[in-house]
Image (cartoon, rainbow over the protein chains, first blue to last red):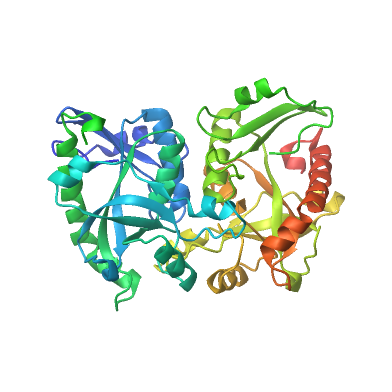
Length: 232
Length: 232
């Protein structure tokens, strides 16, 4: 879960199907060696019927699980876009490394089940990445909707989140289950507490912000190169 | 995903760990032969830190996927409890066979992504089970919250749902990905459009309704015994 290596060449179409993580699932894997690291770039692919990207927690959890089982990664980098809260200092194009993740749309008002639903987790600590790279730090809140209902908003406030995505906490849940270190690099495509409609702002900024994310993740991978997990 | 056979004996504690679906995951599998059928009863288990049942779509999707991969079932029976809508004729203790499933808390207001989020699916058709057994038929809507926000309510109305659970559509999504037939047997523990708070009513009725569910699923399994999938 990191970008393809700089020296990668476009794969011939015939090779793509061989790189499915699991036969039958739309999940795609690219892989290669880059600066001494073996990198598997995995993404949930496109819905085979509807043709849109398989966003959201269910797909993210499944592909994380399948990847851990088949690829046994030392580290997961969940890279993606997010909404940001300007009240918490986020701006378009900012790239965050999440300190904590939690869900904001799993309300189970029964004692202990409520905590399970929210699913707050500390992410794998990488103090040296933070020291060396120009990334912001904030808490990430995850839900399966692109918009934000009043109930979501209240939960996001309780989660003290600066950024909001649709996958992070699900990836963290699965990574935690198998004790795989995971970090979360999220680039802000839209301001949730701003004036513009989320879907419109998201689509408007997606290309430029994806480039910022690409750059940030490449810097993270470059930093990791040659180091032990405990040195991050 | 069906009840343990009538002739099952309690498993010694030492054997339970061997029946984990996957090492590291809390998912539990019981299995045995019953009236000529091989039955694997799989459930997501308990959260290893919090000790509560792993409810919701992420756990349901993961354990469904792991089960399909390792057990290659001919048929999945997703049995569980649900909230019912009295406006649609549901009463406490009613057992439904879902005709359709969909999500009600995955709002993605971008064309086509909206349909992916809702994820409506027809379930595997079992006309003979419906003809022979005393089950109600209705549409099932799935979300990760036990309560129902106004946004959820509007989506549930759009899904034309009679019953509401926290797993069904996620199980259906994974089953569909691997072309595994799946049916959904849901017993009503609480009336969503009634007077009582959901959590209270759910806990009050859980034991009695679980017995009704047990009876219904046993009848379904008895009916399946000796038949081909296409005869259901």
